Image 1 (cartoon, rainbow, N blue to C red):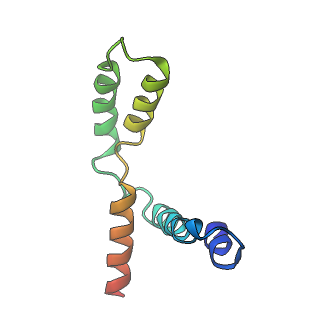
Image 2 (image 1 turned 45 degrees about the vertical axis):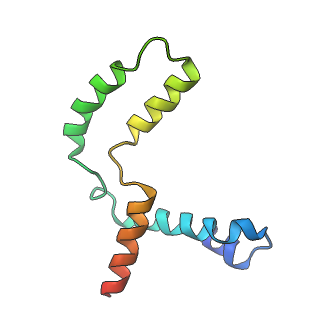
Image 3 (image 1 turned 30 degrees about the vertical axis):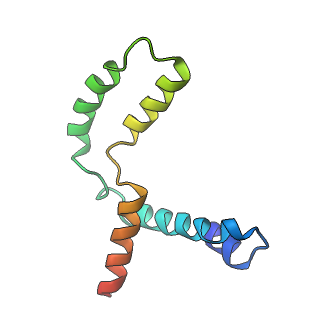
Length: 94
């Protein structure tokens, strides 16, 4: 709600006017689709995640390694694009 109101009523740069409501819509979808917004069952993904995390080569520096781990950690969740697409498809049906 804060994101939406800050974009709609706040005095911010024009560059913020579209991304902020889009982030608010993403957060809304994340809240309403909780538990149904994964590409695969979480227990299955947990078994897949570990070998992928271990497969990160040792020559990768620590900063890059942390970035790759974060991508893997959230890799089972729907993407920003998919969340917005599903949210707007749901709105069309109503």
